[in-house]
Picture 1 (cartoon, rainbow, N blue to C red):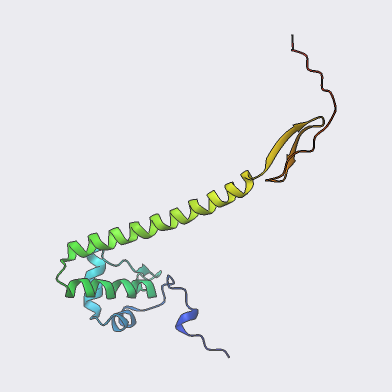
Picture 2 (tube, rainbow, N blue to C red):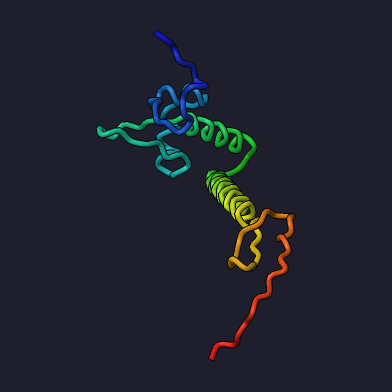
Length: 141
């Protein structure tokens, strides 16, 4: 039987009880309950309404503890966490848009030329072959 380690666990999976999360964060479980009540950390709930914390929640609890130790108020901490979450969301969106732009640029590198057989696609950086054919154009009536 293979034993996993913490590196194998998705950081967003809610697997830790309040006691385990409190121990990992270096806090009292009652502090976690208070932080949950005021919305600093929002653990998921089981069907029986038991709190379950993820490794990401524990990291956030450690950050709350560090900011609190620096003298930041709980409201200030809530604002800092909100801005960090918004920043992370915007960074993900920028990455998505950059990927879309790269895909668009790779598709838009196709060049088209009009020839005797109609519009054809040619490789970027190359020139269409010249033809000595005479094309008669008549103005539509």
